[in-house]
Length: 469
Image 1 (cartoon, rainbow, N blue to C red):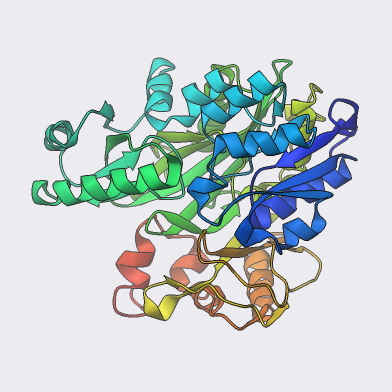
Image 2 (image 1 turned 90 degrees about the horizontal axis):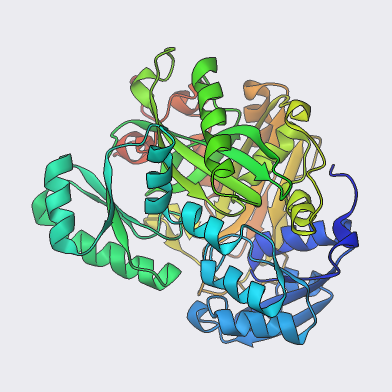
């Protein structure tokens, strides 16, 4: 639990987001004694977050471009309700320097990094350049490419397969794997278009595709007094189409020297840009060599915001990341030092989405007729769900995050299986049964998966393969 409340520096916070993360932020504000205002679209008038906030402002219609992605509407909500701070959550405008600039001009405290630090870290291509300047290993790739022709030239130089990646945003949007020159044209148009729609920024760069990679990220917090600390690492290798499905802390089987090198690299990166707030530094580890002391890693990107998977770090450290964000924004120092950070046990998070796995993971918005979340020691559910909620079709399909902690990884897996067995959702299909089956696979039990394992093995024609993966 964080220490001194942030209310001495802040009074009223605009939460500029929706869903489970809006609920999460609202509850942290309540714990800190802060008033809350929620900016919602017309589609979210009846959301759980809207029921919890002290005040609700409808900022536009359902379409994100006309509500959650409209900086002018968001700032009008903040200023007209007398908010002295704004929390962007994740996604939407959370990594847009323009929002931080608008907050500065309006005299509203942005709960996150300043615009210069965000440009240097939140832009993936800029962050790669920063890492190179600090002699931190970076995978082969380019800076921003001007057009499709430049991308094709870079891909030929790097060697196929490659990834086209959006410079802004995250969550797998604006990302396409390209296996040959003939695929590049369609992939370029799709990636750029998706990035523009999701983030308002269609810039792309090219990166070498690592066939069997582990995705490991380090959580960092930095205050305005020059303190930068890491809170250990998370393994997010279990993914589908670059979207994380399962996250855990700490990473399994990572050599101690590699773990320590990643922690140090993350602290150096964040310290180099004058960063304030929560950030995550992401790395790729060669899955073929992840159990040797010579295991290589390469810097991937910085997420200049709170991560979806932050609860697993909270579960093993006992720290509240959102309350620390509020403290930092209020000008207070972190409530702990690096030597105070001790990870105990093992935590795992699974995402529960309103999707139909049997139909290609098609999003399935609709009415939740019944909702009952699991409870118990070491079990946490972050959600915005309640019986009778009509899930709008305009946004991400995430319904909830089920997070557990155990004394060790086998205990955490057992607790997670039990929790998912006791999650009840009626009225819409969800990914919970699919994920529950996934947790029984020998490769998952052994922690021997990589970022494309789900598609290459688990979904490649047989759900329960028995051969060695």
